[in-house]
Amino acid sequence: MDTPTFHGGVNLAMKIPEARYEATVAFYRETLGLPVAEHSSTGSPAVTRTHSVEFGPITLWLDRVDDSRERAEVWLEVRTDDLSAATTHLARAGTATCDEVEPFDDPDTRAHWIGNPAGIVHLLAEHRDASRG
Image 1 (cartoon, helix red, strand yellow):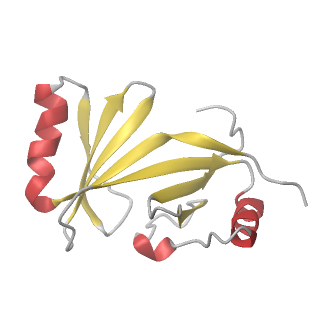
Image 2 (cartoon, rainbow, N blue to C red):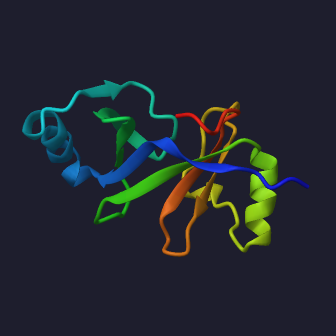
């Protein structure tokens, strides 16, 4: 079996508690003056509102989560050319998927959630040309 390739993705997400959400959106939009857009679809029932921020070559997603979190969390994206091979490779290395952290609404999503040893969540997304953003 070939080893899949992995590359950093173009998406970062902050999971932000409801009480801090508006101030965080305002920080990026008003304080820093970055382009911020609200999106009507969040892609997950766990995310009640979402804004995207043009953060250089990265899209920073500000996701409001109305759960028991007291602090914001940062989630990262990793892209792979072969999702099945990647999940097998990672499982052999002791990294299992953890899709229960945030269910996907889109049945066509070719991705899984994984966590690094420090507990940071990563979206492992299939991207056929993983060498590009």
